[in-house]
Amino acid sequence: NILFHLNSVEAMQWRAGDPSLPASVCSVPCRMGERKKIVKGVPCCWHCERCEGYHFQASEFSCELCPYEQRPDANRTGCQNIPIIKLEWHSPWAVIPVFISMLGIIATTFVIVTFVRYNETPIVRASGREMSYVLLTGIFLCYAITFLMIAAPDVGVCSFRRIFLGLGMCFSYAALLTKTNRIHRIFEQGKKSVSAPRFISPASQLVITFSLISVQLLGVFVWFAVDPPHTFVDYGEQRTQDPAAARGVLKCDISDLSLICSLGYSILLMVTCTVYAIKTRGVPETFNEAKPIGFTMYTTCIIWLAFIPIFFGTAQSAERMYIQTTTLTISLSLSASVSLGMLYMPKVYVIIFHPEQNIPKRKRSFKAIVTAATMSGKLQKGGDRPNGEVKTELCESMETNSE
Image (cartoon, rainbow, N blue to C red; front, top):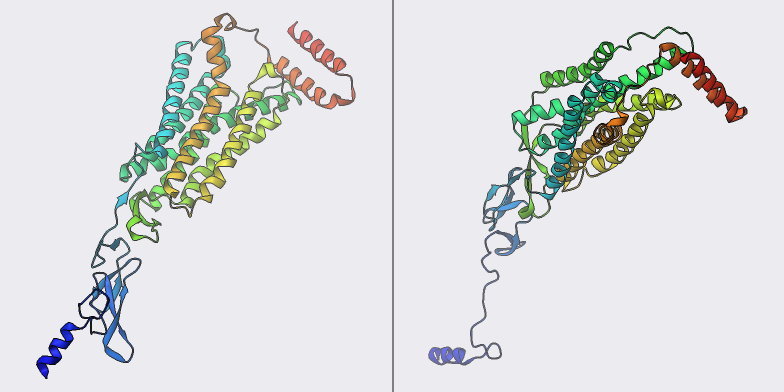
């Protein structure tokens, strides 16, 4: 009977065209990366449950979370270190800022060389040579910071980033603020008396400018003392739901708050300079650079107003490092380009292509400047008078002073 039974079983067909016997167990072995979840009330049976997310199979019956700086391996039987990345020079996020910066450095160097070559000519002297070189230094630093922002972070690079991140803007806007303040004080003083205001000499202007710059440097040194520069790996920025795409980002320890503090003083100088540019917008054009400085500051303010929402609006983006670095470096380069293009390129153009215009002009006494300031006030108050009458009064006054 037993033999007959076995032969009968072998002759059975369990599925159409498949003579194999079906599995007669309640559970099958789990694959790698899966844990056994015991069926309630049936201790010998289980369900296979995959270890998800950043969990790996720690034992036959459990999944555990990998350390924060690690992710599961391909089989989810262990953990491996999360790859560490940084902004690479060949990345499009770096190529564009570097290209703009290189053009700016070449243009700035050309302007500096031209000014040094024609240092004694009237146009260079009239532009305020000392302050011009300070401003051009700031413009150069604004372009150069791009290379520090893209370079691989280490203690040295992080230290230089702290120093130069806001220093270029500080040089530029401290010089422009000193210039516009000088113009404002001269013409305000001219409305009250014929005596010149204090601290308008080139030496005084340099002292004021470097005093403003020293505040930025003092803040940086305090920053160094309170929190020495170092690097760290940010595993949270690109910690995606898919562990295979997770990356750690190598960074300098410059938080958004630190960045605001570093650039905040320079932005304060920029805003103050813009206020003075507005105040001096009505000053006679032949006496100063008020209008070009005004246009420079208005454009620069627009650039930085656009920078703020782009920079801080991408704080939660997985591409945060790339977007913020590119936005910051391009904003610095654009603001430097505005200053270079509006304040110095017209002068260089005249020096090189129209040397016949680079001639001394009649020097005006401070009394003439006082008269111009007074008449400027009359022009502003003369809205109820015919324009020709006011202009004639100004011309007569200028002729009187020239005599």
